[in-house]
Amino acid sequence: MVANPSYLTNCAHPPSVLLEKSTPHGGKFWKAVAHPSGLALQWGRLSTAGQGRVLDLTRCARSNPVQEMMDRALAKIHEGYRLC
Image (cartoon, rainbow, N blue to C red; front, top):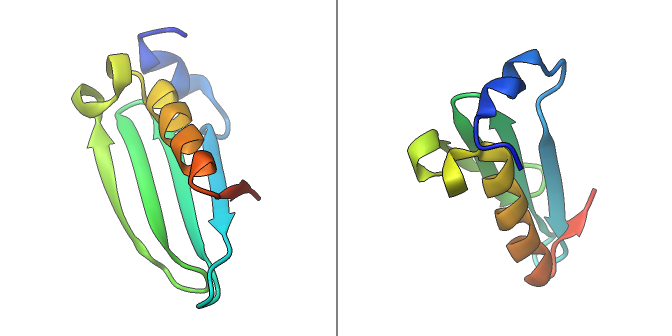
């Protein structure tokens, strides 16, 4: 994977992942969007805005937000989340 995320500036739609998990209380979601400046994360219960944070490039795996998104999404899938 390319270590320089500047290629993301040319993407018409930034790479993203949306996952959901069923729970006894209605379910929850996890969303990640890769941007040239870092990775935007959002999570919470379904039908809510949830909460979020942005990881800058220095906190992303190999300074690559797409790689960080993939690593985190795989971890969530192993926790029982599914792709939407």
